[in-house]
Image 1: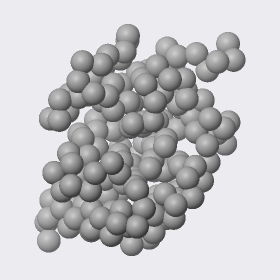
Image 2 (image 1 turned 135 degrees about the horizontal axis):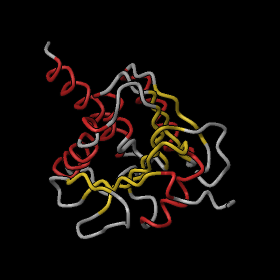
Image 3 (image 1 turned 120 degrees about the horizontal axis):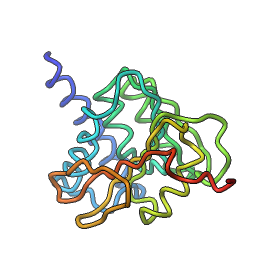
Length: 183
């Protein structure tokens, strides 16, 4: 099986588990295959922009977007999924085991003081962009970046954008430009 076929197979397995668990609990807004395909495509848009062996934290991971598809596509990354809701934690732990991913899953509030800092913090559908920056800043090393999946027409001063086929963008904000709130 070539790399793209292997990636497609793992993504399909993730989506099957998401659909199966989604029947019992509300993991995503819609389990419509087209909506899920957009979530995967938006997550995978980050993959070529993440440097090798980076540490990545997906804050408010929910059903695993964007962290799980990124971890599937980039086994070299050190991915951590952070979620507070127990049912979603159960799903994330299950899917990480089922897919054989080396991913850490933490049941933790993103508002709590983190025990470690990461190269990249990823947030999708957590809070408005400015609030997302504030929540993510303590999680990221000074040389790192905060990446926020945002809808069309949303921008942040000083952030670079990775356009998404869905019409939105991943807004990349350098952590050093954002106050930790203790300055």
